[in-house]
Amino acid sequence: MSNSIAVINAGSSSVKFAIYQATKDERCLFRGQVEGIGVVPRLKIADDKGGVVEDRTLAAQGFDHGAATREIIETGRALLKGGSVIGIGHRVVHGGLGYAAPVRVTETVLDDLAKLEPLAPLHQPHNLAPIRAIMMAAPQIPQIACFDTAFHRTQSNLTQTFALPRRFSEEGVRRYGFHGLSYEFLASRLKELAPELANGRIVFAHLGNGASLCAVKDGRSVASTMGFTAVDGLMMGTRCGAVDPGVILYMMQHHGMDAAAIEDLIYKQSGLLGVSGISSDMRALRTSPDPAAKEAIALFVYRIVRELGSLVAALGGIDGLVFSAGIGERDALTRAEIVEGSRWTGAILDSARNEHTREGLISGDNSSVAVWVIPTDEERLIARHTAAMLR
Image (tube, rainbow, N blue to C red; front, side, top):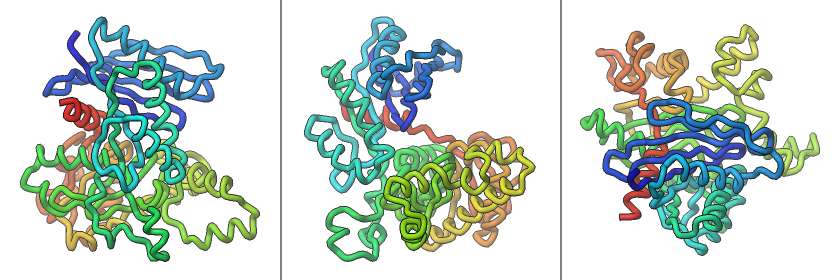
């Protein structure tokens, strides 16, 4: 088997991975994940046709992100049957002010990225754990870090600044924006699908368990709903999105909540889960007869419609709206509700296209805004960046 590039995307309780041929067509050979880390870890791997090649439970005792990475390395070696992994690309949520492009990881780079853990406490430590494990297990393999914040570094200083004393901005308290790897992929894919539209004024909607919007003009990020952390902006699966800072002070003063309790509240207990009291999964809420489920969905849509208006203002108009990620790609009703709430933009859906299109134009012929659905593929983009760095 020929040379390959591996991609690792580590979350709080899972490590997703993919293996691509190191060729121009970037064919994905295998895709899988170790899920249930800290509970009942399980390894699942599928081949390029979706066929299951591995599905087994792993020993739970002492099984952490490092152990998951080592399991992936060993299983990957067996699957490649003598082929070589010539590089490994990683999704790293935060690059701070210092990293605005993919970078080959050294001990110095790793130390720099570890210093950013307070800015993304629920993501950054997990992103870095596989890098450390690979440095120990296979130090000869180059590792490339790709950053979720990098795409947004084209935003103006004005856009990134909070109205706080200047000293806080100078130490890095500013709007970074996230989901940048997804937005970079979507912008490149839109250029392939609709080159005449791609350089216009586009709002990309990455709607999944984590959700955000990004305003893009001429292929560059202009504004986004996420800010200093990945909890800002839209309502999400378990994250609250934008909230009055006075609410946090109230929780601390009147409910005795400390920083750890607040963190747990705004990241893990809020959003669709908190409002519905049922689930963070949009599919479960859509099938629930409970009025609280309907209210949670209505609030989710309302927040998107409201923030969409702010990004249209930042762009000075809108030419295209692109839906992506789990909800954005698969939930036609949510797309319809968002576009209906945004009819003032001139966006009109074609209901048949919206129901049946998995990638492509879903707006009507009479719509003045081109509405698309495009599946995102952060892993493929990371593989592409990794190959470029190795060259």
